[in-house]
Amino acid sequence: MEAHGTISPDTLAAAEDAFDRVGPTAQVVVRETAKAMEFDREEYRERVTGDVVETVRNALFAESLTVFVGSRTEFDDWCRDHSSFEVVELGNPAVDHVAWHPIPFAETVVATTFQNERDAALSTLRRNAFGRVYRDALLGDDEPTDTDAGGEETTGTDAGGVEPTDSDAGGVD
Figure 1 (cartoon, rainbow, N blue to C red):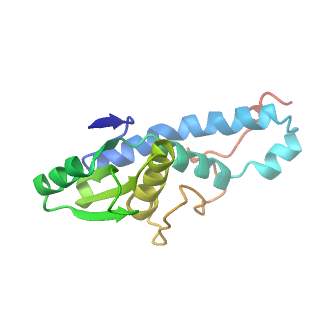
Figure 2 (cartoon, rainbow, N blue to C red):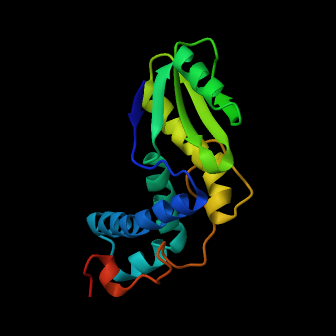
């Protein structure tokens, strides 16, 4: 069994803390992307919304979740050892490999099966864990999806709760 990723919160408070920590990174990613796309100040203000930064924040959080990868037997053993967890399994149960992300504060484990496409399965699993559990827990959004790690409505501020400034447009004056 292997573990991949850096975020594995045991409590909702730990999940909220990890989610807050990716906010500044999301701001930098969006700002640098806009700079690379040569947005001028007007285009930056028009296109770089709180929704854009929030979507990046959600994706960064989701893609950093710790995922365990192992055989069907290893996953079944894990489930036996954690019998209080609700199991949400995606994919075909007849394939050889399983990737899973336990969410202790929700007593849920989200899993996906795969035969060959490991990286795609891990990404799908992470987006599903975010959409099915973390989105509602962190944002209070009660419309989970199984494929999206972004797209929430925000108040028009960036992920840190601050309106973008002129300097956020990559130094455009």
